[in-house]
Image (tube, rainbow, N blue to C red):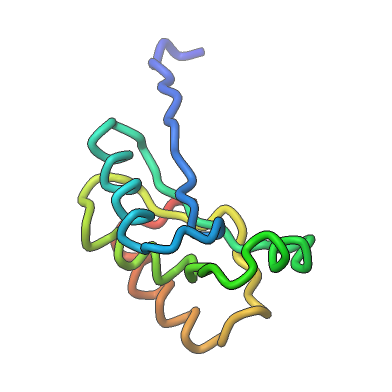
Amino acid sequence: MSGEAHVMKIGVTIPNHWGVENVHDVLALAVEAESLGYASVWTMDHLLNVGRVRDRLEERPYWHPLSILSAVAVMTSQVALGTSVMVLPYHDPSASRSMRRRLTPCRMAA
């Protein structure tokens, strides 16, 4: 090692995929994560067990990962943003590309 300090950065996944009825509750978690010093905020899609997710959520909402990150980008200023899973074939490619392009110059996490 060259003597450089290595710092572990911790992120948090917000529950865009858990059927939280009020989207403002999901967004508030991202704002809280930033105020607590988390380095990143993540959303997710599902790749496996789509039927189980549908059964679990019933009629409750499944918030689009990039839409949530777009709102989080407006409401925060420091945290990096990312999707831990993004199943592109589930989404309109043009809309997904457009949302990613708008987020990328900001704070997209790798």
